[in-house]
Structure formats: C-alpha cells, structure tokens
Image (tube, rainbow, N blue to C red; front, side, top):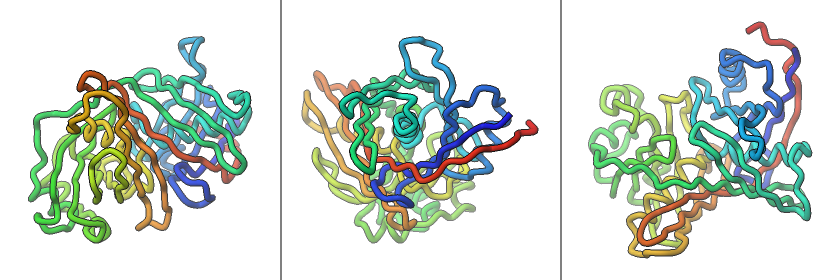
Length: 299
C-alpha cells in the first residue's frame, strides 16, 4: 500500500532553513514498526503520522517519531503538521485563520493557523504547568558533555511539558557556538531521562528578551536540532515561573539553528494567573518544500 508524504521546513519563512519535517497526512495502515522505520529512513529530527482523531470534536491524532523512538509531544512536528494539513486543504482556513485541536501523547494540543502568501504561521498552546523537579544539573558534568569550561555555565535547571529538557544558560553567544557534544563524557556523566536533551542558550531571561540557542539530544538520535519548539515552550514556562509577575503573558524570541546553517526563528510564551503558569505556547512559520510517495512497506 502506497503512502504519500510531505516535506516541510518549520520555524522559517525560507525554504531550506528551519527544522525539516516529514509528514504522512494519512498514516492509516502503517504499523508502529513501519512508522519507526520511516522516521529512521528520513532521519530528520522528527517525522509525523496523521490518523483519525479518537474524539470527533478534534481534528486528527498525530504520532511523532524521532529516528530512535516515539515522543508524546514535540513543538516543530505539531506546528509543521498543522501547516501541512492546511496546505493540503485537509484543514479549512476561512479568511486565512483557523484553530484546530490535535491529539498527541500529552493530550489535546490547540493550534492556531494563519495563512499568508508564501508561508503558513502556526502557534500551538498546551494547557499545562511545566514540570520542574527539585533535582539540579551537575554543572561540571554538563560542561564536560558540552566540551566547555564549567565557568561558561551561568545557570542550569530541568523542565518539561511532555519531553524532559536540561536547560543551560551560558555566558554569551560565543560560548554557545563553541559547544559541541563529547559523547564519552555525556554517556558517562549525564545519565537519566532529564539529561537526554540539553538546550543551551545565551541572552537575557526577562519578558520580551531574545535569546540565541542550540539543542543536542543524542539519546533521541538527534545530534543537533535546528529548532526545538517543545524546549522553547518549556523554557518560556520555566522562566515565567521564576518571573515576579503574577498575571499576564511572558514572551521570549529564540534564534536557533544558525551554527547548522539552518537559521530558525521561534516565538514562545507562557500565561500566568495568580502567580502560576497555566499554559505555554510556541509559534512560527512553515514552508512546504516537497511531496512524494513511499511505494511499498514490507513491514
């Protein structure tokens, strides 16, 4: 049985920038094993597989795979899948704007879609408070895994809205660019689920700030990610939780993927009410760059 796919670049308005994504807009008939094999074959950070929603009030169910494993949630696959469904006409966007709900492993995820000439803009919103464990990253181990001196790390913490991340704020942009993974040190000194993905950045951490970032996740089969929506949303949520504001929207802009030659732009935010984060969001543009068909799958 043949299956069509679409290739999109997410968090960019220019083809061949941003984060690549393979979307199978009708994945009915594909087994779990076939989905994982296809994600390995494309070897993008993630590939998505669209299925009928369990709730008739929702738009679709979306399964997300890295080259090594299935994820319960991820930002650029959610954003990119919504944009592809709009591009194909599966989702109607009257007057250029629409809201859809995608079912993912973390539950329903709302996505607002806006179509402009040349690109589709989407923003996902997850009604959740970020998980923030009391566990603190060991800076010496983190620095060794990133091939940096320990004094390059200003602060480090963990957070999750479905996918756990270790966040590391570095002294400056040059330190971010100097970083590279030392796999031996990573494997020996960063055990456990909270260290599978490290998002490092430089810049101010207040509302309205712009930061410069990179993300490594060798445990997921991702040596470096050009744009990480789930990490950006989680970062906004954890920073908002630390901010003194009691109510309102906390916003940050993220520049990522520059060192890889795939510049990406992400806009993340978190909503606070009575001193608590109640939702996180991340948005950006997507451009479709190709379409094709997998003729047969012997799996």
